[in-house]
Amino acid sequence: MTPDDNATAAPDRRAFPTIAEAFRVWMRIGLLSFGGPAGQIALMHRILVEENKWLGERRFLYALNFCMLLPGPEAQQLAVYIGWLMNRTLGGIIAGVLFVLPGFAAIMALSWVYALYGNVGIVEAVFFGLKAAVLAIVVHAVVRIGRRALRNGAMLAVAAGSFIAIFAFDVPFPLIIATAGAIGYFGARSGFTAFMPAGGHGSVGGKIVEDADTILGESIPPHARVNARWALRIGAILALLWLGPTLLLLGVLGPDSVFVDIATFFSQMAVVTFGGAYAVLAYVAQEAVGNFGWLAPGEMLDGLGMAETTPGPLIMVTQFVGFMGAFRDPGTLHPLVAATMGGVLTTWVTFTPCFLFIFIGAPFIERLRANKALSAALATITAAVVGVILNLAVWFGLHVIFEEVVSWRGFGLSIDLPVPASVDPFAAGLFIAASIALFRFRLGTATIIALSAAAGCGLYLVSG
Image (cartoon, rainbow, N blue to C red; front, side, top):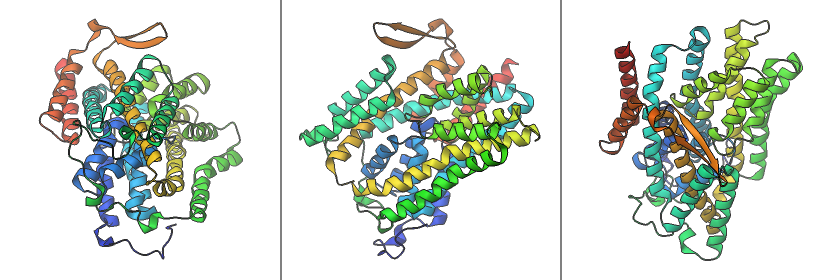
């Protein structure tokens, strides 16, 4: 499936990572990808840009900006994009699969435990410790990404406006993204230097890894210069892989099968999940609980806890939903066999479209990288996304540190406020400790997660 096999080799192609090297790097990222999209993007930035220098700062943010426009998990799509840039189609597949695989295995194991035994105290204790660590990782990611993307006052204003719009006014994420893109595009076209791709970096930025100083460099690799014929061919293959199982199940089992419902529902969800997992989880919960009856209301929160505290995209919570849906309606199959099939099917139809979107869109986006107005639009979108991620950090913090949150509505505002008396001192203490470990002592993500999980277990054992 690799395009342009006869193209002239890139200069010093030996400097590019081998497939074996890429496998090791992406497996490491997959195993450490805790903390939702903010933490995962920060982790990829640290490993791919700062440590390995596969690509530079601007190339990384350009790819991220494009992935933010797509439906689906942006961090996993970013992995596919960079894997494709470095190691062709096979590299994109390896990156995307390894980014999801550890989380898939972890949630599948936890789903088995949940289905067989319900909530287990020690598991809940691990989740308790991990949630505090995840909150610290998300806050740290907001700071790291903000330092890179908010290079001047205009970008800071965009991020602040984005945060206020979604936090206080419930403005839909797609509208925020479209507005930010339009501001950046027309701002650059009008000659405002603040929106130019090379606009001043400001004092908030740290040392930047320039594209020219990396393995990928500034040019487009020959294998990335694909034509429309290749895009259509690989698009057709991936579309068949994505939708084929649904059509096959429909033909064999009929429209009343739980597996057909799972495949159809999550295939539809895969193309409307703009704004990340939290933007769509309310809809998933409503349909899974109220329409299909796959879950009880509290079980959706349990599944979200699994996804928040295991590696991989947060949207992996859908695997738990599909697992429990098939577990409760197994037909002639053993419930656990049906449940496993439901979890696998959900994961397949959720993530296969990500490869389709990247392999079709990324080559054409690479060609437009020199378009300053488009680059400005994408950079402004990243600034807006910083505000959205900050909103996620605030939302997550309210629900981790406080046991009770109330919604206040008035004057067109809709704001979640904590009940001060409901603060959980243990969760707050763990969050503060994890934050100090990240910001002051610069401990690695894996170390902080392990220590937080151990602290959660320790509190559980001490409290009896």
